[in-house]
Length: 293
Image (cartoon, rainbow, N blue to C red):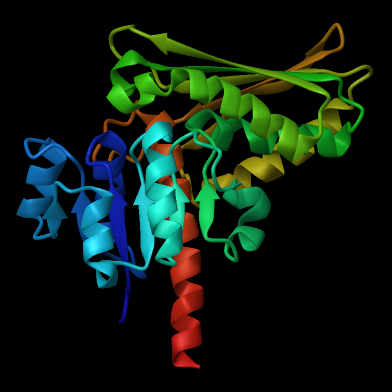
């Protein structure tokens, strides 16, 4: 079966996990795995797998335009500004896993269809992928909700250099995306890097200020949303709620990783790579259907 080629920029934790997921995809194959560090463990692993590698990052794609149609950018928010200017001119379909806010923000379970017709898709943040669907479900039942706050707690071990560099962008982008997707008047996002041993699983808590909440309807909408997300993120689980106290509704989500490249406690990375591959496969499938026609 013909597959669509993808390029992966960034050879760290996220890029390496993407590579494993792409390797088993029915619609995708990796045309190039590129970064800057020749001593990267990701580069070494890709070579063992027989994947073409480069230490020239986006220049490798610029100099070899036929190596891929889709590009995953798993670098950093700052670097993506540079990469996007090059890749957009080349007509590549870009899936941005950094909190750059350059492209159209996408949460597959909410707006994937409309994101297949743009050239640069931004996956918000790992916390955003986890909590925005729940916030969206809450606003569907209670559009009068005044305030939403999320607290993302992840294992310190699952926060690599890229995640740490982007902490400020993480909180701001997550907050902005909650406002954008839900229309809630006020929102706040916090992240906690937990150094506990053994490493903790990813837990995201969503607080919503709602007068007289309809808990049964909220529960129904939230559970339906969780089932949709589990179709592409199997380890996504509802752990608490929704429960109400003093006009505050609390919901907690847990994300267990698939354990492809990263440990299962790195659900924070797994949820965004799962979302990225889901979008890429949908784009590739549509392109393959057009080729057949």
